[in-house]
Length: 98
Length: 392
Image 1 (cartoon, helix red, strand yellow):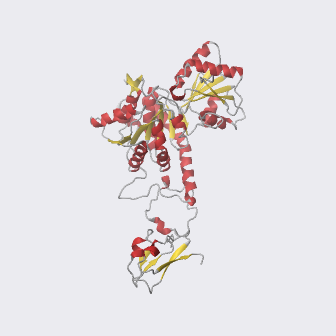
Image 2 (tube, helix red, strand yellow):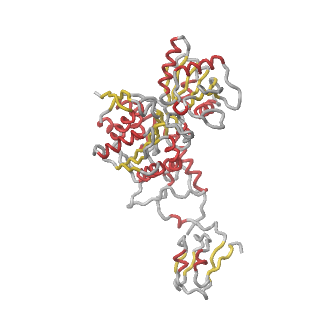
Image 3 (cartoon, one colour):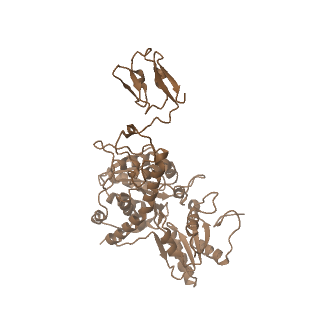
């Protein structure tokens, strides 16, 4: 379960030189919580081609059991590349505040 | 018996680096540092030194390579001066904040413009806040000795920080001095092979220099600050060990004829030996004058400095650089600030001289002494006096 980033540690407990000793640990944190908009998928239009999954720069998309590619909003930064690249216009960017 | 030979100081430094068994040298030639790395490249080419010599296309890359090599666990050396140091600026902070031991000699030279290849301290004074340990040599022997010391301190597991050894361009780098060269066995006794703590290695991947979001950055910088402050104890310890192995003793702050001195000159670098002569001449005339010189500039040894000068009535700080728009030169402002909270403190007089290779003779120290005796300093926005500048 991803958690909110807070003051993570005292300077005394930080690893030397602030290295990340466990590569890939960003998945433990809610790295998408500063997003202003998020993608909404219209499954009726989606052809399950996977272009959103290919183009997503944050690897926030993954394939579900039905073969649809869905976005994990814990990590999505709301850049909208998926919506731009979708060949059938199945993805719409919606403001988080709406 | 150790050999005492006449040798160009740059060559002696390169020989010291060789004795330290460095793995990687990355450097770009720039006057007056060139002879050091030129000699090292010869040593590597001749097979006398088993190291990678990486000739890079700029100093920015020289320091970037040093960072990468140190991150992979190598013992790393580079050298530069003036514009070269300025071009490294961005990477200097990265080296220290990623806690990478690197040793660099800076053959101090004036910054452009106008172009000057000659000596002053404007290059390193613009890099005071890079969180590197910074030492200053007053002569060739010190330039040689401080090189071994720099590796010892940088790689200490309690420190893990880069070190810059400052030697005055030309007045040290290009001068032939009698230098007591040491034996390899003694260096090996003093300086163990580098033990790495965190290293780039495919078997145990880590991420170095990642993004530090606001929730982390302050703590990262606090860690660096504390590491630099705490390094002082190791710097001193490594000088004590040096004395045991090599017989020469060094301290963060050195005193010369300060007993009963009412006026004390404050210097850094090679001008110190001229100041000693000036003190001798003034003492011959019965003046109660002494000298204190700063060997460890970063972290600044506040207590050691205070203890060295507290009995004086006045101190005269000689800066070799201008801090533009500030009240005085960088060394002066450091010292004045350091002494502000002391209940008993001497009067402080600031002087700037020796810019861009302008010679500083003993007469300049007599001039400083006369100013202090008269108690007359210029009034105005700055609190220092330029020596040897033509106003009219």
